[in-house]
Length: 252
Image (cartoon, one colour):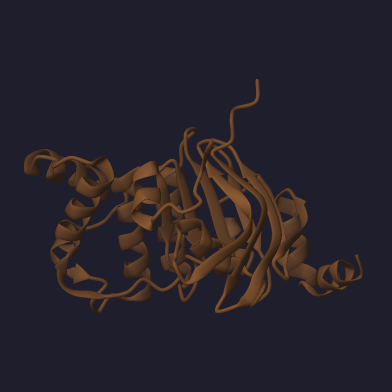
């Protein structure tokens, strides 16, 4: 029996400041599946991530997105998060004066809809930090303030661990990472992935997929998924680039 989809994207169209970026995108993600979205710069990868999370700068002009069978149309970002949708940003912002631990506690309380007792929260936090091999001193630092690229992404993995979403979207989480930081982040993602969660990896390069193995790879060109396949498709792109696929898509 095929499991019901977590995320269903049906002919999605979206624009930014009046310019159409997504032009009829279709995608279905089921529990336990890892999907990779690859494409050249300007193809609509980050627009997809922001549209899924409800960023008000991105206007949906057609199609529909359903999460756990419920349409996301008109739903605010915080409500999407409470439903179990998570976005890791390409460029996480610094929040001086707000510690990682305080930020996480407020986020957990908001998503769960109740005040988690401090002792219970700290026990859970320390357990997740141990799982992700994060030093406890990390929690006392101001969120992303003075963090290296790898530390910012590690903070996002800690958020992912604490919020326990049903669907995680990682928007070019490998951006700006050296090989050691990339491995650390990938190890964190692999440790957190489970049969009830869906994962959408948005990336420009194949190297992230050496460490997080997707079952499905999709090529996004000019706002549409023009080709889908297995992990071998990512290796093909690494060898030949996007030019051949772009040329085929333009004549289709």
